[in-house]
Length: 121
Image: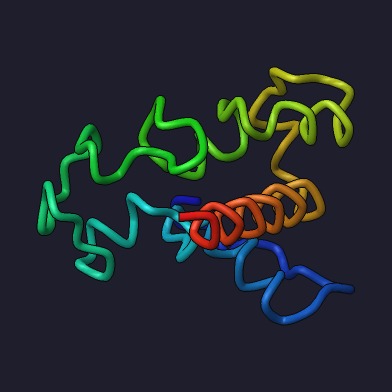
């Protein structure tokens, strides 16, 4: 975001607005990598580090890349169908996914999929 103040998110619940702002700021509490980096989610194979390539910070859905907002919004294969449904494109540009409605939908889907994954384990 740089020095810009993010636009307000209107017409949604507080939790959704918080998710959108956190994704925009790259400090999303739904990111495994972010929680690992700040010490909130230590893993047996790595107690805590700030390395973006750490295996403890990989996306829990695809296990291919680091679980960062860019991965969530643009790259994660687990969200390919949703990106297509929202944007008619499975490989959108950064500008296409900046809208709060797209970010909110992707963040909500990620949380649902993560909770199902945790429940299944």
